[in-house]
Length: 230
Image 1 (tube, rainbow, N blue to C red):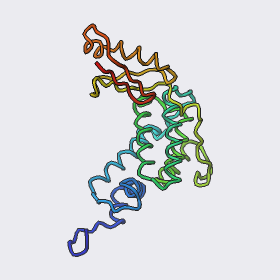
Image 2: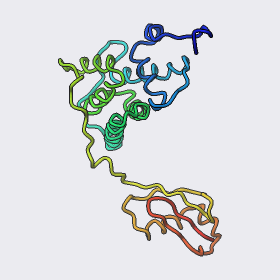
Image 3: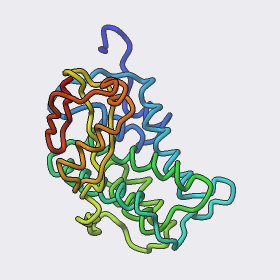
Image 4: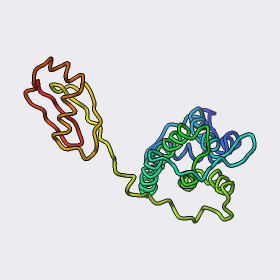
């Protein structure tokens, strides 16, 4: 991109076409700030669609009314929220805006899946808006106002992650048979080595590979993988 190539795209053009927040989000989410990054006008659409999805999750497009409830979110949503809070906070401190944006997109995708036809719980909607503010301040301020707040969120407190929702309750183990991954199992995070081994030996692909025999060895690497040696 350069003047000699006559293909310069000015920030004003992008803001007029997509809005300042879309342009800002795209610029900050394309990659680490310290490295050069390719520019693609077509990719700006991705940032625009994310903001549109957030808006539809929180605001009724037909009436303009806010779509939030006072319902308590389910445990999976609380886990998704608090993992996002912890991750986004860490990313902001480290100036990793691209990975912070990815975590917000992941959280919003979860909300779309779970609450697409009903209102998003306020206890989830408000932290989402607060986390979006550094990347998309104008949209965040508008949503914050629609959520019923009189003051600006610019100097408000950042959400705080609840540690109890950051601990995984299950662990997925890849199962290797003679060094090659053939299956996977999910067990409680506090499962003992013996319980993991029992679950592995009950897996249908392991049972088929053993063909009625016994393994020479079962190697359990806690939290990582299991290797069955036949």
